[in-house]
Image 1 (cartoon, rainbow, N blue to C red):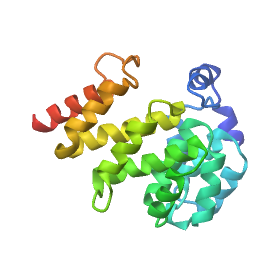
Image 2: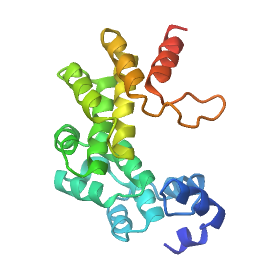
Image 3: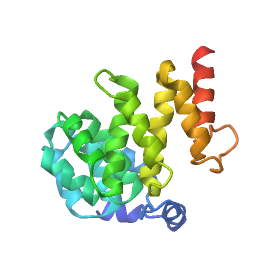
Length: 213
């Protein structure tokens, strides 16, 4: 904890806080500490329990994803309010867990929009890698009905799922693009030069173009 505190940089914190992340540690330096520590599940649990965002990010880098129980992961996702902690928990830990599918189903229907966004992130992963058994038309129905008025983080996760369906599944592409065009979600999102817009019709078109190229 003292080492993490020594890495605190006010300028980094200022940038991160604009995105809802309350820490000022350079992530490259954080990863270097994780590389030195290697996998340490007990230390990871202790770091998580501090509640400190930088410590929790480090915990997610040194933990053993399959060692967490289902209920433990459910508790952790409800504690993971900063976006970076939430994203790393889902991407680095829950996706590798034997409980991922059970949690995907439960979280997608959760009344907490941040928890629900984790369910949608896991669904997007399945759309891309394991679509068998998923009701893609049903997912598009839900996105069409609910994405426009969803809170920001849930809306972002649903939009990602919409784009992934359009990118990966040609038979649903026209409908995915049409939903994006009608809902106009993230159409005006500021996008840096060289980056792809998160507006689903543009995102789908660009990724399909790259696949064909």
